[in-house]
Image 1 (cartoon, one colour):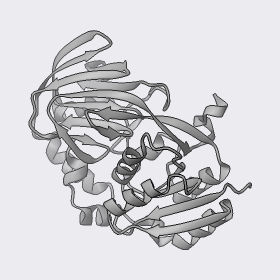
Image 2 (cartoon, helix red, strand yellow):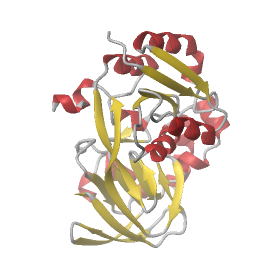
Image 3 (tube, helix red, strand yellow):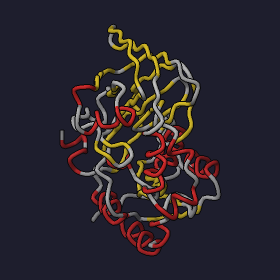
Length: 295
């Protein structure tokens, strides 16, 4: 396979379940075989990872990130709009890896390495929620705080089961949020247990959005489900007729709910928001069927 310039590999030993770190030698060999030159940096904190990623602009042809959805979110948010940003490579180092599924990067770390080696790329959209960014999901209400309130030690020990334990409690505590949504000059007034805005197909490891739009078409999907058993969770899996799906490039959402929005598993702002789908200006190594050159 052809080599493609100089790459920086960022990884951490504190994210998720640590699969990549157990196979670090194999990852290093594969990336060294793929690129002309490889630098590796073990990050000491999220702030360190973000600083190294921003510093890579204009210095590297590729930036390979190993981490969870939150790590990916923060790094991409810091790179949006940066000049001479490197092509992004992603190796899941987190607990569930919902964000990777947007680009066909799911399953083992070896699949991610193979995708990077094959070299197919695509641009992609991100969501801008007020002044913050997300790459695949913004959520508020029941279940939304699970990713950031679940302790890291339980994620490492139990993997995605740690989230599911939390989800059981959230399902049994009824919630109702009144929301007013404006999208494409249409208005919606609903009482819902939670709100999901998605650019991909999966949340929490479950396929929620079976007919999502392209990763680079300037549109996201907003889901508003009616209250019901388990806070309407079953409406996503079996009774989809009880869920309103809105496809648009911009959503104005007024919510009467005090807790923060969840952005890719990270704590975001609270209250009323404007969500826009924007071109990240970045490129990512992806599975062939997602590559823009194949469309």
